[in-house]
Length: 185
Image (cartoon, rainbow, N blue to C red; front, side, top):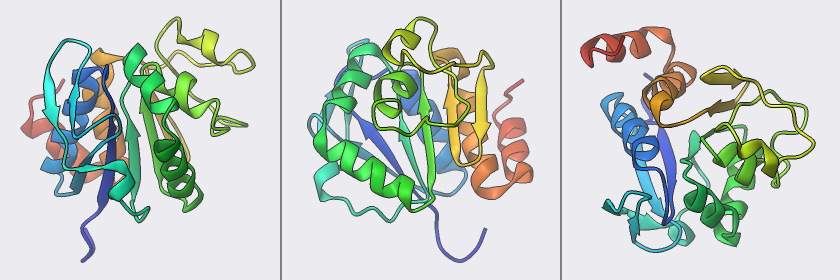
């Protein structure tokens, strides 16, 4: 796995879809990565289903030296991410460093599209979220990997999404091992 622990920024805003944030965070920590839950709307964020999560740090306090950035969905959560100047600044800088940009549910359409990160790429999003990205043609697979861009459709895809990020960062062997240990079909 190399001598440097991989660093992942997971952006957390009020209204986030809990499974889409926690499942990948859990899988990535099992993979041995440093996963920083970055608060965008506050240090404590309330999910779409009223589950409160305490973040590790505020997004403004973080550098941009990350191997990946993850954006969970949830209609309001994705809107809160898109509305954050600090999040968009970090997102673009991390993307420009060639790191993995991973977004699920509404986030590909609501956050990545306006940031210009879907141009010339293949991506998927939650059914119905396409209206937020009028000039983009989304695919229909559960998880879509296009180079360093990983997108996924919704809560039911969150574990596959997390495993796809592990596979991209560390290869299929580690992803397969985690999948088997966690009894994921």
